[in-house]
Image 1 (cartoon, protein in one colour):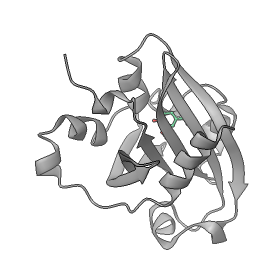
Image 2 (tube, protein in one colour; image 1 turned 60 degrees about the vertical axis):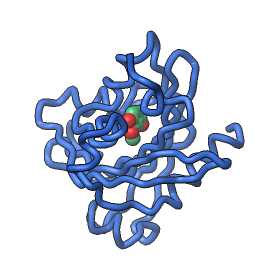
Image 3 (cartoon, protein in one colour; image 1 turned 45 degrees about the vertical axis):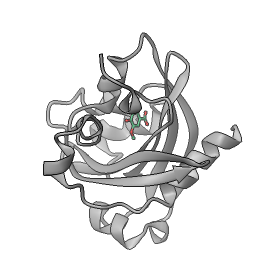
Length: 178
Ligand code: VNL
């Protein structure tokens, strides 16, 4: 994996997540992205011809590895960690890290462990009962650049996963509209 991609994953891990100021953020273009409750994958797809997923990592972690905060959001669970970079027309736009508790990877959700290059959002929001809550945001500095990130909990069939997304420098969130 190229170093810069590892750098983004590390930056996500070090993020200081805070509750967003909804009233303030809702009025901004960035807020529209950060507070998106539906599929980020779909939103990014609408901004390019081809959205591709590169899987950087897929591994299991024991429950002792979770932070207290992650434990509150997911329960005391061993998890599968999926790390990806999403690119729009070959430009890296989003680095995403998802914690999927083993108890979520059951029944109809077993396939989430084997998505490969299929975007997680496409799989999850395919299901009518998918929903998102616990949205938090972070401001990160990565390689001297100020970047935006968010973390949120996705539910599929009432089973949770925790999604962290870092918007990379060329992502549409930073671009002028129109
Ligand atoms: C993935 C795709 C993850 C889109 C995302 O956020 C996302 C993935 C965690 O394929 O893992 O917005």
